Image (cartoon, rainbow over all chains, first blue to last red; front, side, top):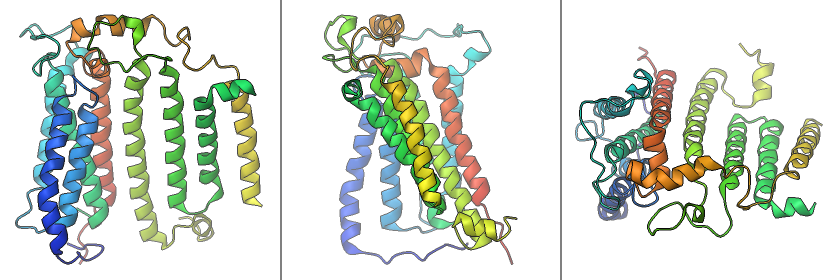
Length: 147
Length: 119
Length: 92
């Protein structure tokens, strides 16, 4: 496949610093996503930080077709699954006239715990995955010129 | 004139909108036009979110049992989240179209593209 | 010539908009018309109806979850559009 410009050479300083810093950025992004209903943050801000860590990984470690874990097919499958999960949880209110499904009761919990708020925690995770994959695929497309 | 200086957030947002508009009109480079459009979007967000501030109150995270009039208005913030996402999508699409225009015409100056026939 | 004309046009437009800003209510006043009963309803009953301490997260993911669904769809559509524009068939 044709790339627009050739890849940079392997650099020792960037590799070692990248191995140290990228896990911290990802742990912070997961913390911001999971505590979306207890402190400022939420799905969009945490998703942007996770996407920035994926872009950093792509810039430092280059792209090798055989060992890359963020190929186009796998990433698009995750994104479509997240969008369908969001639609299954909250997208039916357009058809039922605003009523809830009577299948299961949503436990609200006490405010202040991590597992409170009903559907807010799975929805935050779905939105975080969607935003991070969107930001990463935009960068990948503009950097390589094509798929 | 004094009233404009009391509402300095809204005045600054309108002036930023004007700066973005001049950037959109006065340059011929397509990338600079896209930057001008992005500046105009940011100015509108600043104007809208600044309407929700109440002096002396704190951010709407309910920890202690304060009454409902001790917090800032949360509605404009929640409405502008969607707008920011739309601005990002429009910028990405415009940049993709600029790449295609460059591959066809060889230049990204709008006046030269018009002179080339604009097919 | 073209640059001076665009600056003059923008200056006229901004002066007209600033006449509108001069009539706005004061910044940060608690009796603005934009702080009406909608925000009070969200702040008073937000914690016990949604269970979220962050009221903005409760608004965009519980009261108005359908708007956030539409916005995630906008992100997905923009992604697919950019892929469709930048895709290149393999030329021989």
